[in-house]
Image 1 (tube, rainbow, N blue to C red):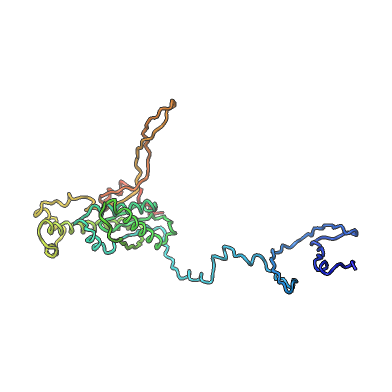
Image 2: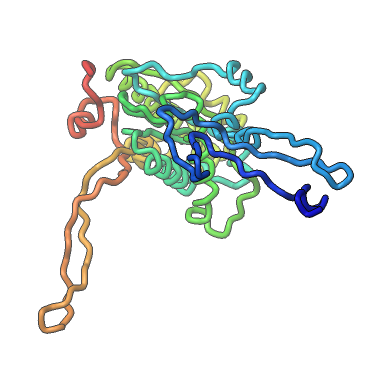
Length: 341
């Protein structure tokens, strides 16, 4: 009656299983035996199903199936759309020039009441924004700006953003635009910024020092032509009593010599003595200069004293000078890279 035990005990009795590689002696003592080769099996997880209080089946799945690795997560059936992206890497061994121009800045200047023919506040804000771009992207070796435009020259050996034109242009444009808004009050005080300005950009490559210098000369010549015209135009309007239409008609077909003559003979203005920032534009370059600071130190007896400490620091500095001739490039030979690089 007690040999097989009750029904409940029979259902719960568990038969001991032998582990792989184990055998037993005649006295049932386990004798361990290590197999020479053992296969590694994945960890399994099971789910039991009960019917009428008893386990009827068990579904077993590898544990790895429940998780996805990061490499698998990064890929999907939609990843093929990346094939539509174009390769816009700039040609190697070329200077990369990103030029920004104010979008519809004539309207912007009128609505913010910029002074004519030149507003030093607006020019100063443009220069401050350009300096912010150079300080953020140290691969820019020189920048030149005038009116509502600025050109940024990346060194020939730059690998920034893998030389992708779209990355370089959008980063320069966004940094410049946000800086223009950020530093507005520094130059215009309490005058409100009525709406955010916009700047469009383009990328141009120049393979040689000669090409790059010609580009910068072109922009500075454009600065001279535009500023001379604007100076005479607004002088005729503000001091000569002409309307804008009459001033435009007066200057139609005139050459540079004619405009200089109008300024000098009628208004006693020598154009060559006008502000260099208006006539030459602004050139930004990296320069090392000594900076002296006062540092407080303690003497052995506990007394404090002040000492002047001079250090050489690399900063962005502005120049309002001629970049068409040789003098500027002779004074700053480290700007351009060797054409044989």
